[in-house]
Length: 172
Image (cartoon, rainbow, N blue to C red; front, side, top):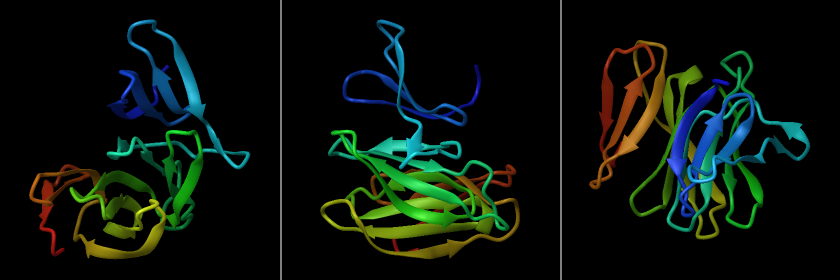
């Protein structure tokens, strides 16, 4: 029905989809069965998940921007533990979009399209947030969208309006 954004395969071979209207959707390609493991946080419907990834411990991290923006910073970032526990790790963001984790899994990176910046958070061993800050602000365009890392820890950040790809080294 449309609305699929970021997608990754989980350890069980299911396609996990950040769906802007349904929440987090799991699709088994063998059986064609679909389930929605997450569609709300503490009884409030998710805004509209956008991007996601899995860490080495099987936690699913995803952004939930919905219609948030500079004048309505209601976007959030969540971590879904393998046991099903859902934790909000960042909130009050202006359209959190792309999401990635450093190769050593100590830093969480989130592109914030509404404020045209990269938010960086230091993670504790239990995956709780210890400290966050905007590490890089971009000039021009609508803001950063998708994000990827290479093995050296360099970030590749696509600009939403197609003005190119920003490359940020591990020192910012």
